[in-house]
Image (cartoon, rainbow, N blue to C red):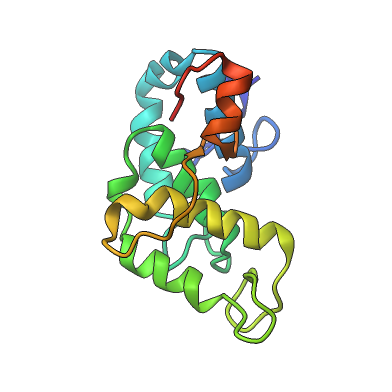
Length: 168
């Protein structure tokens, strides 16, 4: 199914024959990681097309599809995909973090989807998840527990499920 959802644009679509989408791209790559089938991405230059597609989703923040608004959750969906591929250094980390932090609501706390929006739990979680993954690029580390990017939970909980195996 993952092979069938390889988008014409290099991303991975929700259903076969469609354009790539940030959420489905992450879920497909994380699934391949869990199945220990990352070799699938090596077929026909797919991995390089996928990396190209992901990197080109960055405006300052990340967009889930071409020509769409940047949205904080895609910092995790797209940034996390690059993290799983070992290519997160290809992102312009400073502008991505700046976009995410600007989406933090000064009165209510939490993070919104867009600049000037109201915060919600989903966008707050994925914004913090990316901040945690990107800490290695900054000297002002925000103190968050290590995240298991593949599962989207803290590593100490993932260890319980995985018998101590440390996944990216």
